[in-house]
Length: 569
Image 1 (spheres, rainbow, N blue to C red):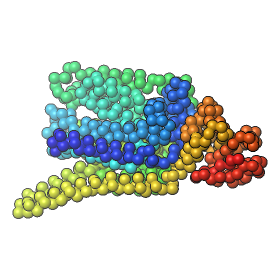
Image 2 (image 1 turned 90 degrees about the vertical axis):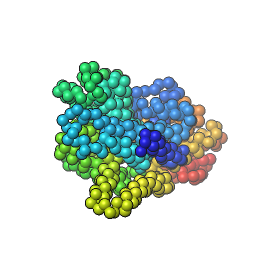
Image 3 (image 1 turned 60 degrees about the horizontal axis):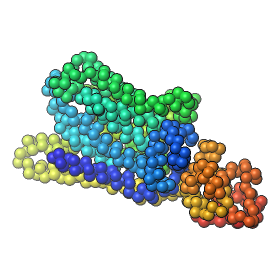
Image 4 (image 1 turned 135 degrees about the horizontal axis):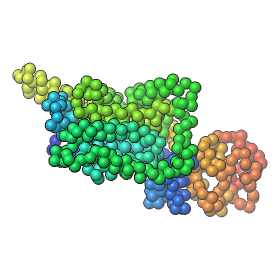
């Protein structure tokens, strides 16, 4: 492939990824899950008050960067669920480019070995790393672009989707900056990694991953093997690895500082809900750790996340063929680490450390396992190893056919035809991946009843119904669903609040709406004959409560205008 063809292929892959992340985003997923709505309500409040926070403490606490970006989207597009989710779609699409660049950086720098003793020994064994890095990078980005796992979270308004994006670009610029000694690359690395701490609690394990290349380059600098870590020998005397590392630490510290100051002033916000679901809060932490590791490992091949917001029907997080590629790439990395004396141990160690440490946010917990959201930081290394495994398998087959041509020269024509058929089969196999992903996500998952209720679609419809009523109508929303309390009201009400823009008291007064807890009904709920009144229920299946209110107010009648229940006079 020429450079133009490689570039065109990358653009095509990005287009596929963008399609999967933006197609029907105004309709799929349906409804609006309360956690997403909570983000939206905080964003709307920030727009109204100008108070954009570095950390929003409600709903177990959330870092503010993603919510503040959602506020910008809401200001541009209005109060719609897709305005919250399109931010995720943008980051999800850009991550595809990040995986491509990082993979090419990992496996495409042959000069890391040049002028070393290992070069002549390893140049044949590792030729597929160097000369075929474009293909490994294209395959890795393709697997990410068509990954159900990543697509799903790229279409939900959760801040965790920023982890793969910021980690991928941060590590890319860090490796590039350490290799070339360029200040700008180290600055960008510090910015991306520093911003990562403003996203999701799982990102706090990234420093353990970064320790691998940082220690590696410092050790190489100390040992004065400068030709291993510099682009060319002319740059030797100007390169200062400790200086580059200190610059990276400084930029990272400055970018992460606002959140750090918040945690110093509010230490209770640092762990949030993590302490409640930690394995260390159980009777037998070791037993829980073993169970969570087995569940997390099994989610790639056997049984994935069963939460319908995170996955489709407990299916493995990887399609079968991609799972085989990932296992192959993982074994290749282990082989390079333990059985090959090469300078590529930096790449293998970095990827394996990424897998190990970014699995900890899931394996150190004991709730809802396997958990696709908490392990979202695993997506980039999994896709990179899948791309490596896929290309290695293909090359092995092609090389075997070339060997047969030497053994059986009279069958060269037939073997050439077989090579073309193998290439065609590979293309068809890759084509099947997005087709299956489309079927599972947009047809089977999007149209299922489980998905409908997983995203509180009934509450969204209730909110839109109430928002369409005139302000003269008195509206009561009975909050009869349990959940984490936010300003005295359980979090399921956030969906209705977002649909009606009544999170703040000013909005409630303007829309003539009150949120009532079941225990306060007798004090708050006042129905008069001279004012139209509507009483809505978050849980329309609570017949006892509905009948109790109706008995005290016989002028009210029950109506079911949609997938929710109201009382009105």
